[in-house]
Amino acid sequence: MLAHELICEEGRESDGRMVYRVTDDGHATGMKFLVPRMNRAAAEKLLEEVLERIARINSDGELLPMSQKCACSAPISPKAMISATST
Image 1 (tube, rainbow, N blue to C red):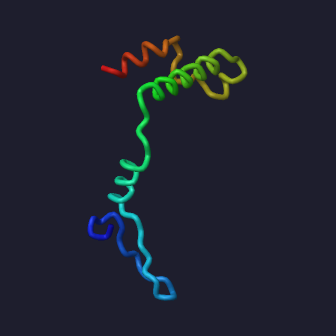
Image 2: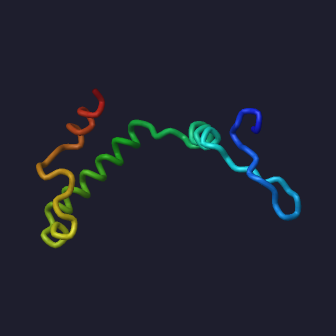
Image 3: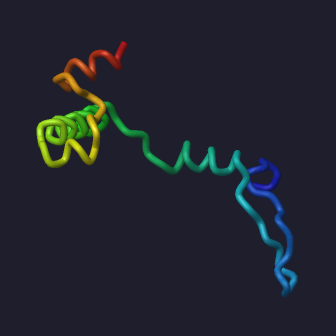
């Protein structure tokens, strides 16, 4: 990992042990290979849930003053939002 510059030496502990830290390249590699990518179906479901929450907040007279107007002031369908992002 040192040779690939995924970690680097940071110093030594008081007992003489070497301290290492993960480099930016090491973090990027970890994120690329260790964290599974989100598939389109999961992303579309999350987007739909967010849009539903926005609609609920925008239609609730008690929540609206606290949140000021949320992202979508006009009704928008999740399908329209998804097709707009897929181009």
